[in-house]
Length: 312
Image 1 (spheres, rainbow, N blue to C red):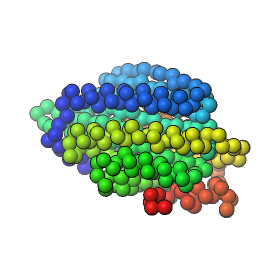
Image 2: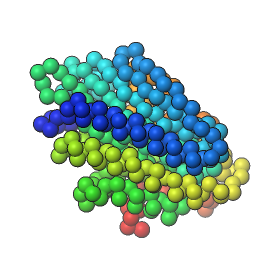
Image 3: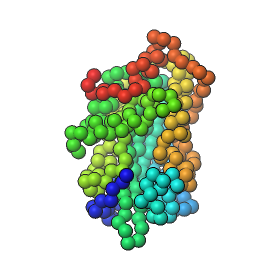
Image 4: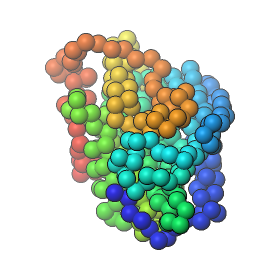
């Protein structure tokens, strides 16, 4: 449960968070667009009737990315969804605002992993009471034909984002990521993990904000080298079909478990922006399993469960 913290953010600090998120959206879009080299992000600004709005940026049919979305939102409300207050009854009767940047990359090439990242800030207020606030976020990698060296490099960069904040931080948030991005009904992780954190408000605003910034700024450092290493790998119909089948797991997770998707839909968020995370093309196959000893079977056997990649 979120703890009250006496180091409460001022309005100036809240505006600093918003300014960072705007800049992060800009820098990530610039980096991804330059790497793609064949398409540009199209921006769609929107307003929310209940308060706030955002700007959604989507790149489609690029050289590398079949679809890539990088969204910023800042929304206000007077009542949280029942699903939120059921888990956090201390939020009942409070006004709230939530802001964040969320992104998902769906590449053409099955050898380039799908990836997701999110950083966010939430604050709920009530007259004559201390506000309740926290940061959250992380990033994760979903390969179809994984390379061990890529997964290790991904986790090394995740660890470097955490190291300035304590030697135990990476292990804590790596474990949380493995547990969060887990499809219980499939008994498998969505991918090879990364970082996931939530409810962060200790030891105070400045350090919590600094950690959120570090996670956001390390995403491209983790992802772009993998894209560069694998984007020219040749593939055929078999690999493409397997990629489209595995994308179905992404849809399952986002619609069944993902907190951001559920919160956005239940709080009256903009549906088009919330569902931007969905892959543009998916194949569904009934009761399919990979052939024993095949490259596809390697994903299931060696990658879709929690591992200490930095001990490899």
